[in-house]
Amino acid sequence: MNKLIPTLLLFAALFTIFPSCTNEKKSNQEESGTDLRLLVGTFTGSGSEGIYQVNFNTRTGALSEKKRVVETSNPAYLTISKDRTNVFSVNENEKGSVSSFKWNADKSMLERISEQSSKGSSPCYIELNQKEDLLATANYVTGNIALYPVNKDGSIQPAVSVKQHTGHGPVVPNQEGPHAHCVRFSEDGRWLYAVDLGNDKVLAYPIVNGEAGDEKVALELDPGDGPRHLIFHPSKNIAFIINELSSTVVSVSVNNQTGEFTRIAKLSTLPKDYEGKNACADIHISGDGRFLYASNRGHNSIAVFKISGDGELEKIATELVHGNWPRNFTLSPNENFLLVANRRSNDITVFKRDPDSGLLIFTGEKIEIDEPVCLKF
Image 1 (cartoon, one colour):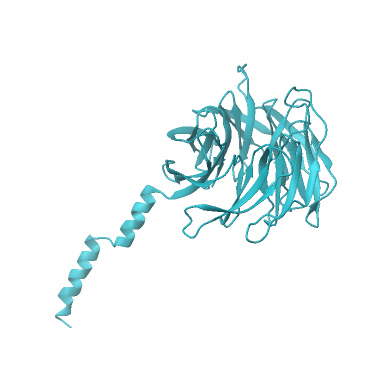
Image 2: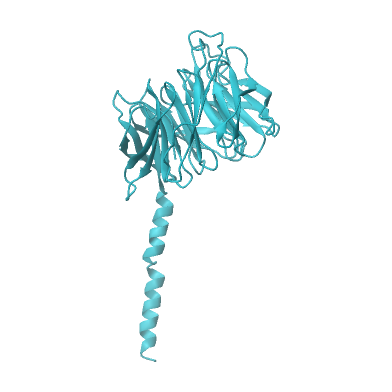
């Protein structure tokens, strides 16, 4: 036993001097950050060929290793299942369709598992309900929406409900007829909301036995607002609508029983001294419900708003996107970054986000990709 003591002491000294490989590896990972998969929907035909994957570093915000993961036509909007197994996409064509995909065995490529008609032209939005057994899409050109059952494997069944919108607004040519631009399910799954840019309305459809019932008007916007997207507050009965044509954001209270909205506030997304053309596009809210972000195409910026407890808004900043035509953007899962898809400059730009102030700072990180129009983690 005495002969073993020097040997044991030697091993102890070596472990003290040289950290274990496991600890060293862990330290390196913490320093370098974790790479996450960012999916990019694109408009095809001018260089892009489908859905792309880009690696995103959660510490530095760096984007790298761009590759196409499936070839498909005009996947302009995507949504992903909670378990990350399935990806759903619109195909924004004259003869519109919706598609679902699954990852192959080594999760390097997507494989199409189903495709259905969108029941209209130019579908531009796609949304799963919380149970992930229903899927909805909005057809822009024909001004209608469709609702589909979804199987457990992610395959899409034929549409069970198709709802045609009517009416128009004062702005020509954008509002010569209805233009459904967004569909969102309520958290409890009782309502399907459809935002129509052409008739200045948010419509509500009750979901009964897996189908959409008769429409009711949840909110009528001001003439010429051109509502585009809708997002719900993460913890309060409040929602926010971004208006493409009037470059404004409207906050509303939500009645979950009736499906109706009541207007709270309306603010411009633009600086007071800006007189150029602009068309708002996308809207997102921080997970703590304190900050709202809205994109300006034309001014090429992200407007930052502070949200009060009752849904009032205060604009606190307007950050240039360092690109052209920010059609879509997203917060990183840890919300330390905001990433912008700039369609006309063919790139994605990255901003550091301060969780306390909500403000954005351009990191200098960007990656080139032809006509990026949707970003999903």
